[in-house]
Length: 228
Ligand SMILES: [Zn+2]
Image (tube, rainbow, N blue to C red; front, side, top):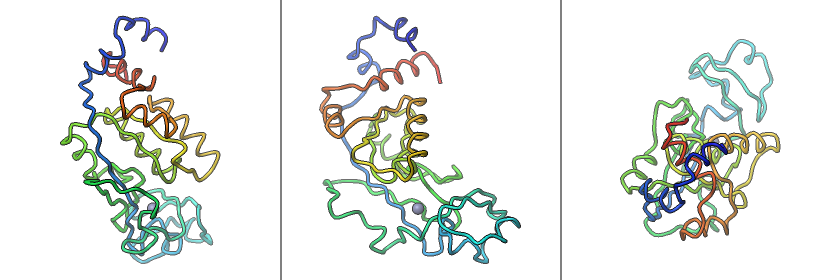
């Protein structure tokens, strides 16, 4: 990484942003799990007749956070307690979340037999949400994300954003994770993908062009040099 910066030492931060056509325009999108009541991620529905568990998992007494394999649909799945059932209080945004004018809303995990951690696409990668097209149509190049859970939905959303070429930041003090081990894994994934981890106050500086995360500069250089 040091060599990359050395090679590009003649590129100032300002040039990098001009080169990358960063437009200082902000759009807000709220993504919500919006599950049907018999969603495949709910452990008490794992043995429903519209899905087939592996023979090994069929014999188990299943509980929350078990990892199982379904033969149909062909997928591995972490099981959770019933959560975020559409049109119930569990799927609603918390009252303290500030909803800005013209905010977008992305509902995910809406298919009975497919889970969706990322705000961009289902876990099988086959169905995209409207998030990417919304960001592209608004000509937005940067994604600043936070919420629940840091090590699951926030992590997958940030990883997809970075893979799609968005300069990406996760706000750690506006997020909460599920397990220390997974939070550590998420931080590793962020580091590997030039995803910045910032505080709320740092995010404010980013949004007012007073700070550029080092990871974003690294991402732009990597894109410029064609390094994955
Ligand atoms: Zn869910």
